[in-house]
Length: 184
Image 1 (cartoon, rainbow, N blue to C red):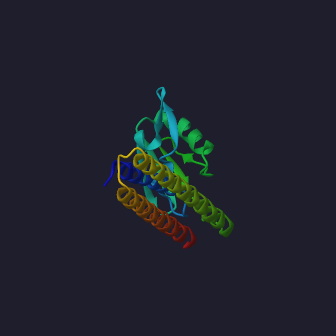
Image 2 (image 1 turned 90 degrees about the vertical axis):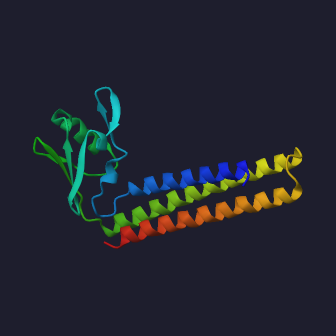
């Protein structure tokens, strides 16, 4: 394969990974430690994800328990969770922080599905933009006589194929997440 196609494929994979991470942060009625990955706390001068300053466990489907290695961090972690978009109020007993996730309402589920569709569409737009850039580079190589017309045609087909595959993967990921949210 050509370097242009390799670079485009790599960028498309990164776009898909960003989508997976974003959708992993959406709440599907059950408590998932992944939900806290995006939340950071000022830990002795540096912004640190919660999962790096304590253990996060899910003893029940709708409960997360955070056991911090430094109990003095409890108020700061609680504040960070309250400021986040989780919409959950943490409680603590001086040693552990508990996050109880309420059952999702039908309206909230529909909102989450809309968010999933929006994020998936944004990812598809990014994928198409990557394809457009790759094809422009291929045409430039042809114009500069680096590749032949047959090479150009083959590379453009390759660019289209990886684009189609990436868009199928985005649809699959979004569909799985929608099912997960609507099944409760």
